Length: 275
Image (cartoon, rainbow, N blue to C red):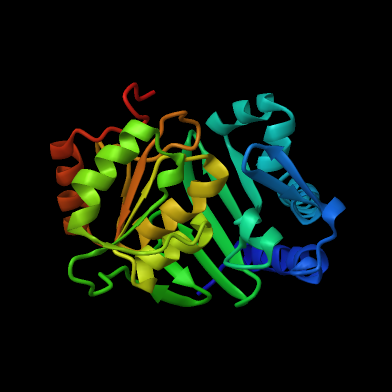
């Protein structure tokens, strides 16, 4: 059963999607899309959603600062808020998909404190689907509790975001790891990838880049569903960490076997010089 906070967050996410996102789905003008960094797009919808949610969450909890993806890009000092209580906003996860009119995208919000995610919400406006979780209280899709389970592929299905790997890393990964798995197409959207691992048929996902707005809500969702999302060394994800690398798996056994294979291959997060 959802709480009053869950209902409030869902109402905000739906409103933002109806006003700023869906009217522009496959309807963006050239001037509505910018490249804020190499291969990193931002649209007018990203900016409008983040502005709306930042204001709305500030009204909801005036004492809790907000860390938004676009605000952090404009002013890296915003990231200093991640070690205390904070809201974390990804206004559109999967912006490249959204901008191209193909693939998955979603709005994500998380609540964290002391570097730990306490609650997360992933809203897919095309499905009107809310994936949500609170620490210690389980994971839900809309109001239905969900439990992570293997997808049934033999060998297990692996989705890998290899474009963020260093060339040396990618070579090791493709030579030593890929042949042992069924390779699943990564959706280019963490907001879709985490539910795929938990309930959608992907067994394992490996990430190199682990920015807080991309991973806070999804990592919590998978762990609360009974899967495993953690650093390669087994340590938990912290939103205020600059470390690279994350492994998500539908079961502890799948996670353990995959990490053992990574370690046996010499693969390390962050490339030859992990940070």
